[in-house]
Image 1 (cartoon, rainbow, N blue to C red):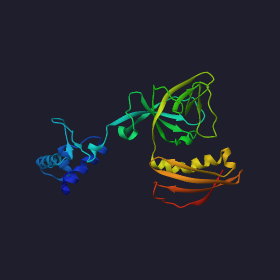
Image 2: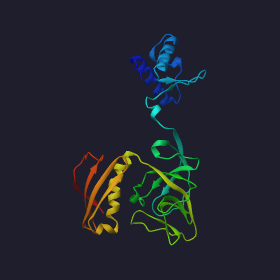
Image 3: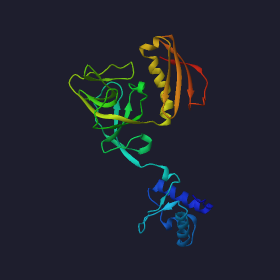
Image 4: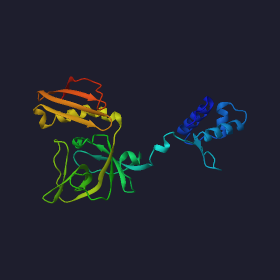
Length: 278
């Protein structure tokens, strides 16, 4: 795009700020008042030049229709809104009503599939799926309708209670598997209803950092913590953690050595010991 003058950049920034705070585009008079223009002709000329340079567009004959055009707009795929229906337990099944909290806006290209009217999202509550890198506080995107395959992650109703688990079959009979040794397999006594099949995961960067201690503590309190444990936790697009758990006194404490990497090539913290309560 063509470079803007100082005044044109100020007007563009003002329009963006107004849209964020007021939820609408400022009128020409409001722009004139902000910058002390005596005539609306000055605003008209600045807006014309911003349009000409490709920074603004509007609908003809429509009030407050100015829109700021992002330089990356042509590179961005279509945005869609996915309804967010409360949370789902990633632990022991619970009876829970699903109330709509709002929606999650995502770029179609970034999640790797095209959402349909049967696509919905749930917030994860619990740590039973840490083996599949699904953590407490994550948002899972699911599709209602497809028949789950062996190994798919699903949101399901087990005898009337909802949960998020891995769908498996044994001797032709379906059951649900937790990806954390603390939780048992779920074999339906009466009914197993699949509400949705996992399609994508959404995680905030700060959630990844906060879950490091929580996840390692979960490993430490499992039965495998009675012996030294080595492993690597991978948090997509953000952080990976290599760790070694050494129980010095199984009933009280676990020694943990860990190395945190922000990317695959640049370690930002060296190995260091730490003592966490069991």
